[in-house]
Figure 1 (cartoon, rainbow, N blue to C red):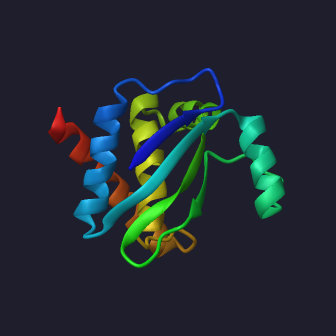
Figure 2: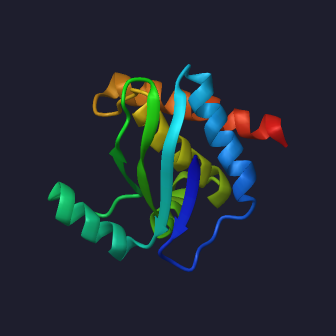
Length: 139
């Protein structure tokens, strides 16, 4: 089950379409969908979580707490809508495309993909692009 929660003024349109797409990401990696909660928030909210749980005094676009067991993908994914907006401007892409990248990114971590090394980051980016294309195929 996929749920969307809001700690900011932002709300996702067409939640069902996004939930279906995220489930397809999980299935395309030969995994089983457990419970994934997305929490949309602002920079301050996510910064507090970053400090409290990770002891990182930085702004970030996403923090994920992975509860995956075996092939059952589960977790909580916190997304700063402000960071997504700023990153979209920095990367010269639409807000919607950057949002999809971040939504996919969290799930891909749960599927086992990392992004700490250069080679891992390249693979992660490739997987994000692959999964974004799955969304467009559903329209």
